[in-house]
Every structure is written in C-alpha cells, then in structure tokens.
Image (cartoon, rainbow, N blue to C red):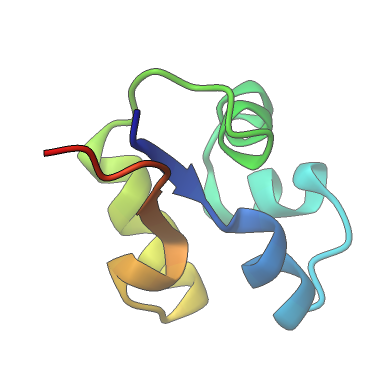
Length: 73
C-alpha cells in the first residue's frame, strides 16, 4: 500500500532548525501537529499547515512530502 511520507526532518536539517519547538515558535504550528508530521504518524494535515511549511522552508510540495510504497495496479 502506498503512503504519504513527510520529509520534515530533511527540511529542518537543511535549514538548521534544531528542534520541533523552534519550528513551532517560528511557524505558529502547534508542537503536537509538527511532531506527528515529523514522525510520519498523522492521518490528515490541514492545507494551511502544508502551505505554512512550504512558505517557511521556501520549498515545493514535493520537497515536503511524497508518495512511497508499493504501486499495485
């Protein structure tokens, strides 16, 4: 089964964001929401959250997340 995978850890590393707490303070996104995204343990994410992260990191949607896993037809 395919699954959406977030790459928040990669973006945080590239931008030298040392903790989820720092990112929460800088973006206004709650720490629990960011933790779920960071751990790829979320079932849904608001479009506003995705847009805020893409704007903050100045990245494309594909830099933040991708589809991974089996590609059964």
